[in-house]
Amino acid sequence: MNSAIHIALLLIVVLTGSSAAATVPTSISILQNQPYIIHDCGSQTDRVRLALDLGKEPLSAAINAASQSPNSHGFHAFFKSDASTGPVVDMLKKVQTMKAIRGLKPNRFILSQPEFVCVDGNTQSRYPRLPRDPYQTCRLIGVFGLWIRGFKYIFLCPKIFTLPISPRARHCPRVIDNQFERKGYLLADYQKYILIHEMIHFYLGRSSLGWESKPLELYKLNECVNFDAKNSLRNPMNYQYYIAMVEQGCNEAPNPSAPPFPLGPQALTVDENDLGHSGPIDVS
Image (tube, rainbow, N blue to C red; front, side, top):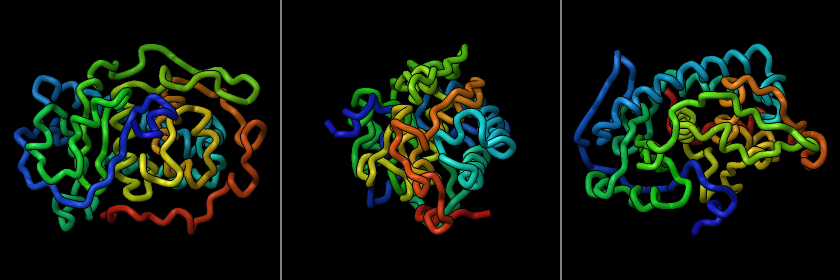
């Protein structure tokens, strides 16, 4: 099993690929002019729509919180300093609006928004040029969804539908000795947050951390705090936790510049030259 799985019970997987999927999926559902394109989900289609709709409010709340008071809700723990405010807000706005971008398979030359595919045993036959079978990846422990790098598709594993769409109570983690006391799954394991996580992979493109990146994508709360500023912006779980902290009204968080975190002053700031986007092309 991939070493990333041993690091944490994975929420999300990022795979790499080099060839296009030549297929026209069997079903498309669009809700009230929202840019939701949902394939192969059958009776779960409305549930995917609902999770996407319910994700809009926490995205708006996180955008407002990051813009107006970036010293709250653990922003500095997850993104290290106010200097990260611009990139974080920009990313969350892309997800909120499902901004169209170019450079994604199966047709790199047209505008693409995320398209959501429910995975079953026949998914690879419907998308025969994918580099790996999403169904086999979905069988790994803790994998609820995956984005295959370079494609416009976000694949939803069957087990994502065993999770609640939204939290029904606050699950704010306590901080003890300047560390979160929990791994974070109770805070963040909800369908709407996972869909947001996957869309962050989509918009980060090749910049995104994943299974084969250096460093690897990480998932536990304290692992996310331990990232320097640059890699915090590349790790989708950092955004997922921050959005969950904002929506659930959580404010207690570690100080990333104090022990046991070994981050020095340079690791807490972002150089604009480090933020160059190496993924698909944004279209305003």
